[in-house]
Length: 513
Image 1 (tube, one colour):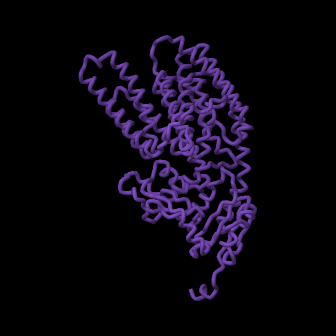
Image 2 (cartoon, one colour):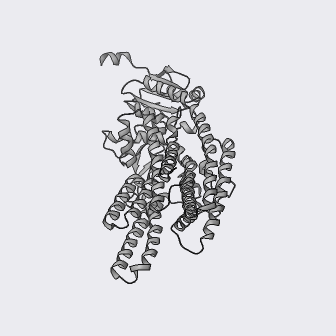
């Protein structure tokens, strides 16, 4: 079979794996519904940059590339389907960008590239961190563009600037990631250029030094911006190094059920890593481009340690970088297999093939787990359809399922009225507003706002109260809901997963209207 046909088949396998969720009976991510809601709010008529009326205090004034894509999908698809298609597009973009990155460096598409299959279905994907994943794709794609147009300086710089603009417009950490991938690549090019005209031609030397300074300054500025937002303290101890430490971002639902699958993939990955180290040792002192990936892996691993604090874990910084380090390690394995060839390439490729059945089992288990959530989604949307048009609805989650903690975002997207939540609060300017330039620091929460309103019951503007979850009876019977609902709200709709309480209107007032 021709190598080009083999490469096409392998790329097809990668894309089918990325689009596997489209064949699921039901699929949802934790933050994904919030992204759909955020995109739907871009056309909102209110002038406030941060609007809390949908109950999620979501920052709808800042638009991103992901919001633009989702907004287009919402023109043709239901919110749930728009979510699934957007997730597929993001996963496919990461795959294509990773392959383009390898091809631009001269690595051919071979069987070892199948190692990208298991790492694409990961914890970050289930968390719904689509904007971050899209930023990773843009970063890898921008570096690939830079390498592909080495002989055309204007085109390569134009593409890099476009990539930087897209990264800035996609996720706050994407420009830093682009510089993180770009700077080592640039240094390796600088070393190669040094052998020719770097020392002899002052113009070439100044060009490379100026280019490096620009990339370094942009990366430093964006890194400072990200760290100012994150502000994580450096931990005093290393994270626990267990058997599944490097692969922890591959767990999806139940670690107990998935552990044997992840350990199996980890064993095959360990064999591939050992083979890759042996193949690199055989290359001797010769510096090759994929040595840059080892440096990147070590840098990312160090960042994982630095952000392994309670605050860093709350912002999922450690898991993001952890997964990215795993991707870089897989890219190195693919590159070293192509460079070494022979027995090393066959071992790494064979291990990747052996990991495919385990990945199929992972997808099958995930599909079964997600399918159990479909009835509750349908019941929730049934309750959404029963809401009064243009009504102000107070939504209350009565369940503790982490995968459905934002299912009310779908209700907020579909409902033509306004959805608020019990965690609603007012935004107020703090004393530091005039000294801090960062937008998110200009706002502070007023935790007593809700209590002041609830002393006299639910605000009279609320027309209906929507409870969602399995424990509605327990939720309604506990303080403060018996007092808040009182005689003013009466049940008007109920199914196995949702219940609607509607305010009893004064008939005399209604008649006068």
